[in-house]
Length: 237
Image (cartoon, rainbow, N blue to C red):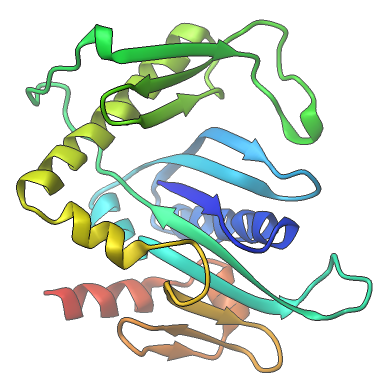
């Protein structure tokens, strides 16, 4: 799964970090294995984007319910005037396919870039160009990995992510649902959110697809999101 900062600048990057913590705690409570495979730090705080590898029974079945734009309203800790800010981040998930699933990727269609793995604050994790970014030129789909121990491992992980993205893309095109999916997701900004997390002037988390509301915002941000997932999956069914 991946989380990307949207409208809101530093606030949005910090919101990504909060969502990362929320999903990590939720996954750990489910006894799922969670590993960060790629990240792009924000300029002042948080992350512009993160990519996680989540392994567990029906992990994708649950996390697909979280796909969309998430909105946060709070008093900004980065605002000296203590004003209320609204931030946005998008969540996406793709299933991991077995390697025996037939799907060919032509090497000529790939551009592979290597670069140095970067940590928070711009510090280099190592001095070799071990991080890998792979671009599928015909579709523009990109996958990257920088947190494995070697360039070979990073390339393999990035290829697995790219392959999963391309398979899902092909399925959506075949079902003529891709245009609808993009239309629903839209811009990572106001008016496109699937869920709002309000800390000021009152506390509430509301899912706009199911109308489910929860007053315990801190509990939700600590990973207690099963009620939202189950409500969405039941409605979808």
